[in-house]
Image (tube, rainbow over all chains, first blue to last red; front, side, top):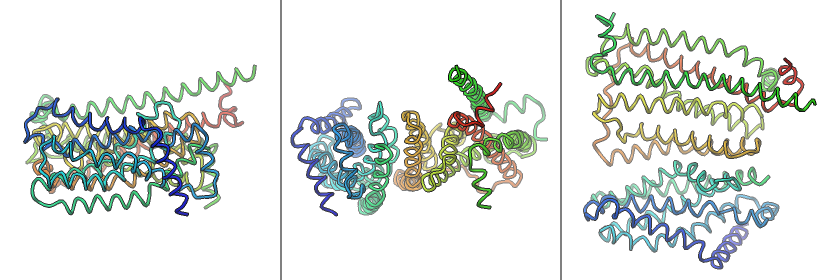
Length: 222
Length: 57
Length: 243
């Protein structure tokens, strides 16, 4: 059963490796959005430190949404999505695999870029570490919830903007717990509680969103 | 009775802008919704009647 | 009982039933609103802490309640629709959303106008305000999704799924915003409404019932239009359309 999920993940990774330009766009978007903030707000290190975690987190939300609109769209266009839906494997495993593959392709690179951005925002080492950890726990949430939105908006005109409209409100808890973990580190109060809440939200999303995404996919493709 | 005069009533103890601003916008919003609802119903009826006539021909 | 339920769940019978109910609810809402406003403005005394500004409460709180309550009712109809594939449930969800969004907007607007004299700011990032704002975003998202999907069946189910996942999320959002609020001290000032006069509470409850009745009347009116549109090929709608 899990083999089906793994096959889906491997297939998506392979496709991503072949079309490198596609997923690099989203990473560059992330870097650029974050870099715009000091230019717009000013370069005072104290202020940058204050807004840094939130800015990185918001940029991560937007970058993930940017790539999510294509999560099912390419497979839908070439017909392979219908093939996968016709297979006897449960659709949940497909949507789970899709979301995890999205996280591997788009989430992991964000984690690697983030320390550099943290330095740009004058964050101390410990805060950068917590920022990366919070993104490590938080980005799968973005992929999982986003897969629901991608399934709902599959094939609609203006799907990308619509997806943003639908999913951003649902991202709020992840944003709050994630960014406040870093804030708490900066304030010296410890980030464990925030990270635990973030992890609890992740578990919940992991348990619920693949099912909803599967139902949504069936609704959208039928 | 809470008010000595009408001007007292409209002034709302100096908070007139806030109180009447709230009630006015609520009133306008609800009246607008009612108009839209009626309009929507009439519109739909008209459209469906037209479609029906067109189908019969 | 079950028979009756199915009888009224048929769009044709519900159309008639709704048509008969609407005037009652609409006039009920109007009468209650007049009574509530009379109590609110002429019977209820001046609040000794907030002065006259507290009189915004008579629309603010009912609107906030209705904004949340209508979302819950939408989630209920969405779940019923997905579980039992009843056409009418999806139509109810669709009919409720605009009114819910309207009440959410009113609660935000009046909250801002109440907050300015009380807190000295139009807007504070307080847990209630923020989660109400997010609730409005959810309403907008759901309505945008319906608007974007031409296929009726797909739109119904997609909207229902989004409504449900939103309903699961709203409590978490509220909790997270509250959590975030305790972290960033300073914005957590609340109106000191702990000791509320009985007559104020009465006025507020009457206004809440007025809002409730109004919402029912509005949703029923909207659902009737939806039914007509969707059932336009049936004989009974054709009979209605006869001039």
